[in-house]
Image (cartoon, rainbow, N blue to C red; front, side, top):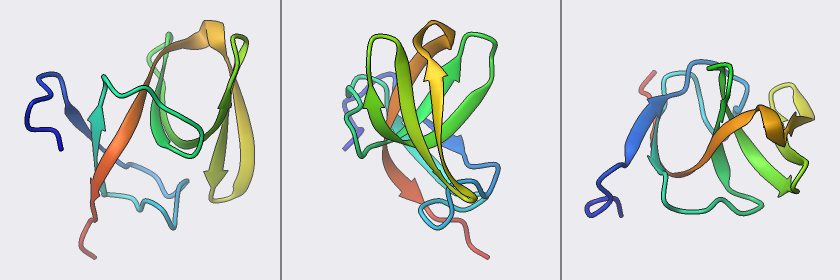
Length: 96
């Protein structure tokens, strides 16, 4: 799935905010060339350097609305605060 994607990368889940979809320690593979759509899991990079892994609900020119699973809540990011949004395409589950 990522063999020909030269700028693909992986990130390690470092919290339990997306359990049960992702657990702390899971390795998430990202295709930065695949535009995210509602329902996709995404890596959100903010201009200040912070990063989040959430489920995309909707994107407008003004905001990005996402779902956090643990604790359950919806979050919103201002478009002007976002540097990049990348689509998670695969996960390697951490062993416990």
